Image (cartoon, rainbow, N blue to C red; front, side, top):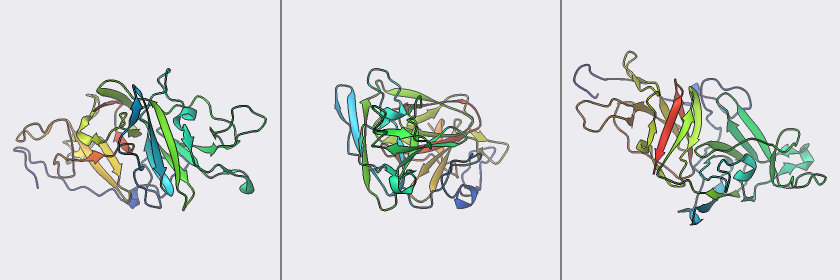
Length: 284
C-alpha cells in the first residue's frame, strides 16, 4: 500500500495475461489488445553499438525462431522517411516457398492501429520485372509501394520455426537529442527512434495524453507494454506524481504507483495504449 496524503492512492489491478489478449498475431482486426505470441519472443539480438560514418549507420539483427519485435531507428539517406522496401538492406531471411503455392516463409506484420498488414519477403523477384528482387510483396506477389517504416515505429518479423536468420538495417542516424512520434487513441506499436537503449522515463507523452483516472481507483489511462519474451510488463503514465515524493511527476509507474526503473533494449519495439491523440517525445 502506498499513501499520498489525502486521498490515499491504493489500487489492486488485474494482471495483463493471456486471458485478455490474442493468442497469436492475426491479419484480422484487433480492437482491444496486442497479441501474445504462442512461442517466446525475445528482443532482437543487436550489436553492442551502432557503426557509423558521419551520420550514416547500420545494424545487423539476428532474428529468433518465429517472431521478433524490431524497431525502426534509421532515416533514409537523403529523403528522411524510410520506405518499407528500404528498411532491410541485406538479409539471410528465407523467401517464398515455391513448393507450397509460394507461401510466405518470412513475414513482416505492420500495425496500423486497427489491423496487421502482412507482407512476405521475396529475395528472388519476378524474372520479368526489373529490380523486383529483395522486396516485400503482398498476397498476390506484387511489390509493395508507398508503405513507410518511420523512425520510432516497430514491426513483427516472423521466420519459420527452428530458423535463424539475420537482417541488416541502415540509414541516417537521427540528429538532435529529442524526437517526437505521433500516437493515436488505441494501441500504438513504437520503438526508440535513436539506436541506443532507452530509459523508459525518457519517453514523455504530450500534454494531451491522460494520466491516472482518479475516479476509477487510479486506473491507467495511458499504458506502455514491454514484451519480455513471455509476458507483457505494463506500466502507467502519471503526469501528476506523489505530492510527498519530489520529482515523481511525469513518470511511468507500476501497479502500486511506484516510479519504475526500466531500460528498453536497443531495437526493441513496445506498445503504448492511450485514450487520446497526441505524441510522445524520446530523449537520448
